[in-house]
Image 1 (cartoon, rainbow, N blue to C red):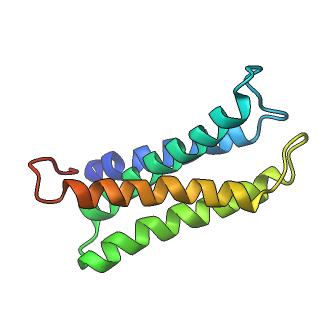
Image 2 (cartoon, helix red, strand yellow; image 1 turned 135 degrees about the vertical axis):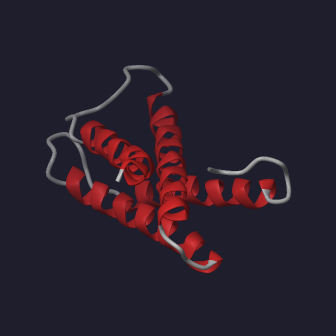
Length: 125
């Protein structure tokens, strides 16, 4: 039970943080570079979510490598879609397919880094 909490707790906390920030009306930094900062944040938050999901699936479920790559990516993408749908109901926010595409960049970057690091001494535990 403690092992599952250590594996899935970060996923739930991170997903909760994404939900929290998505629930803030008219979220802006006030900086001139606000637009680009928000898009970078999208990439970062879904990179981290995919990392936590990959770690949780790898540590808690016995599955082949194909599924280990597909399930975390699919779940992160579904969460990105649901997050945009959620924003449709928040004042000053909007639902954007472009943001889902930007979120998916974070997912792809995670897997690109994972493939790049394959064969190196670094591993995700």
